[in-house]
Image (cartoon, rainbow, N blue to C red):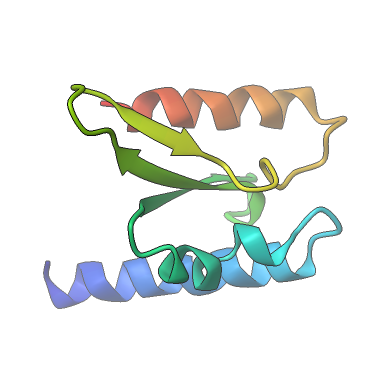
Length: 102
């Protein structure tokens, strides 16, 4: 990973943490601090940004490979963080999940 990429990752992680901390639906279990104590799980964050580049929805995905199977378990603690009445953001968030599955 290059320094530029590391800086970009750190920036989005800080922005993500602030978003979760300040959102009315945010919870500690959705924070990167929580992900880091779940050492047996990998993690990814999904964000949806508005037209101004500000996060308007986020999701912490904890990922654990299953033994003996060619699959994994994905857990989203406390669900996504977003305005539940914003259907467009909901759809965009799940589109991001599908693209992350690669």
